[in-house]
Amino acid sequence: MAEQSEEEKLACLQKGKDLFNLKCDFVLSVAKLKQLPGDDLVEIAFAGRSNVGKSSLINALFGQKKLAKTSSTPGRTQQLNYFNLANKLYIVDLPGYGFAKAPKEVVRNWQNLINTYLVGRASLRRVFLLIDSRHGIKKIDEEIMYMLDKAAGTYQIVLTKIDKISAKELEKVLNETDEKISKHTAAYITVLKTSSEKNLYLDELKAEVANLL
Image 1 (cartoon, rainbow, N blue to C red):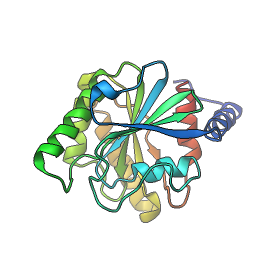
Image 2 (cartoon, one colour):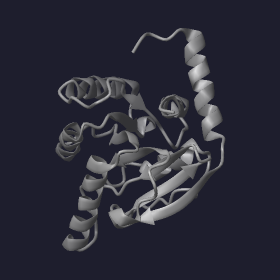
Image 3 (cartoon, helix red, strand yellow):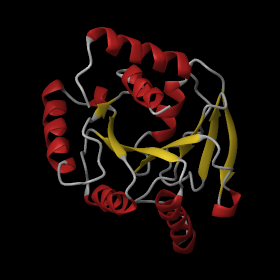
């Protein structure tokens, strides 16, 4: 991607702000692929380990507290939750992976749902893969990244909870993340960083989403 001028960067940031100021509504929860809505709208999806902060980030992007349901119990979200942003795109909150207080069969079923969705959804423009900045990319994250590589879908790393670590620690995890994504063919080169609690760098993520339209 060509280097943007300062004027172009500001225009992109404003485009993102305008997009996320539009009305966003919860549409449905999908437990089976046959329940998926039509593919007439562009989709983006948020994926990540359980309790990485997907729902909190979605709420923060829209300046709301209850648009996406949050829980302190890992693995509570076990369906694909669809949100319609002003009939311009779908935002999909995917079930967390890696841990769930649920029967093994239930866990298997919704993990298979995620995998099949990520591989086969034609309208899915990008997956934002959330990584807790305090822990960096773990083995299970890399397993998902390899799966996404095979699916030939573009995904982008978003570091969450950066307010919980020091600037030095953040620089270290950014460098480690850059090194790891260089080995993944479908990983987008730019790593984003966010804090839902402190509303840090959310505009950059909004701009990235807006550019996909």
